[in-house]
Structure formats: structure tokens, C-alpha cells
Amino acid sequence: MAALTNPTAEVEKLRFMRLPEVEKASGKKRSTIYRDIAAGRFPAPYDLGGGRSVGWLSSEITAWILSRPRVQLHTAAQTGGQHE
Image (tube, rainbow, N blue to C red; front, side):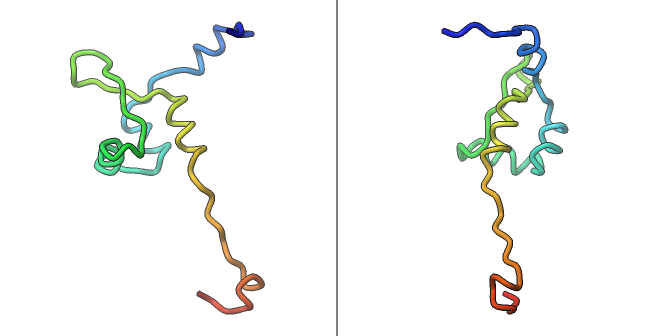
């Protein structure tokens, strides 16, 4: 197992995000986030205690964002000057 070069810096990067921040970062609203969690398409939150307080690991949200496919934009030159 490789040793972390700077364990303190790694821990500082790893943090919990609350729902408003997850909504802002993902561009999704609460209902869509929870629907996607149920379908296995979005990271599940962690219980932060008490059963009503949850948070998402920032690294998991970042990984989800980076896993999204890029949109292919078609220019007029690519479509022969025609609009689709």
C-alpha cells in the first residue's frame, strides 16, 4: 500500500457536502438526485448522525461530475450548413 505524501492535505480535500451544495455542483434538484440515487445513477449520501442529517463525500460528487459524457456540438460546417 502506497503511503500518502501529505495525509493532512488529503483529509482536507475529503469533506461532506450538504444537499444545497450538491444541487449546485451537480445541476440537479433534490427530487432528481434522490430518484437517481434509487436508480443507482448518483452517489448515495452518508448518515451524519441522528438519521435525518446526511452528506455526500466531495470526492464522490467530483468523480460523478467527471464521469459525465461531453456533449457533441454540431457546427454548420459539420452539418453541411443545415440546422438540425
